[in-house]
Image (cartoon, one colour):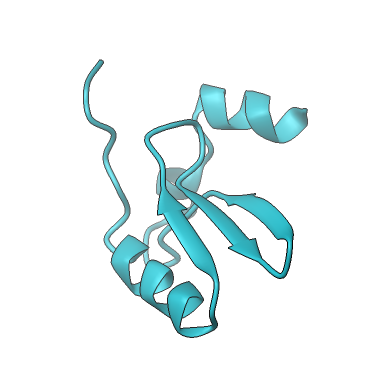
Length: 68
């Protein structure tokens, strides 16, 4: 299994969630972050808004998870 690339803004987003009091787990799965707050857990896929739309497309694995 090879390491996944991460968006350059991932650390900034993790820091912002944690400053809001969220529990954040960076994953190596079809999503980037598992966020928990007040008994609610959500899966988050990070995309870099500074990149062109073609570079922000979901991968096939991300699309499959999103469609579920």
